[in-house]
Length: 172
Ligand SMILES: *[C@@H]1O[C@H](CO)[C@@H](O)[C@H](O)[C@H]1NC(C)=O
Image (tube, rainbow, N blue to C red; front, side):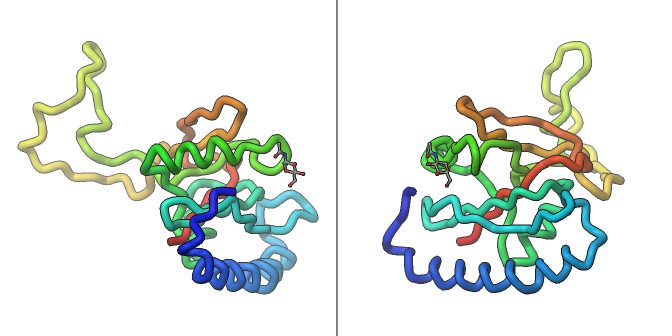
């Protein structure tokens, strides 16, 4: 585990708090039914480690992207972001065929901006319309990113409503 020891005390306190939450509030909610989780499975936040002053935590229950966003936020966390080579290297090294081995939603989704569009013929980015006002009538993101933890990790693009990915959360 890559532990930045300068942040250890505060992160330890946060993790204690998270453990408290995950063993009370969440259990109650999921045990009382109405969730998509596999029967008998309980949400369980597991710390992957600390890198760049933030802790990554995972939960193995599958959800949609939006559900995952709500799940992380319920604990005062954000969905996981990978914003430095060190963070990517950390996640690669955290691969484990039993404990960290599947698809985890990232906190990244379609930008609803010109830069996500390309002209059908040339595949060139749509830049010639930037002077116009863009009205966006999309309430929810449609495509979201997944970090696929494998021996050779990859990024998967999925419909955000796909109910089949696990949670990667982060807390600073
Ligand atoms: C994967 O995780 C399990 C459970 O924590 C552990 O026993 C095992 O040693 C890990 N495997 C590797 C390759 O680190």
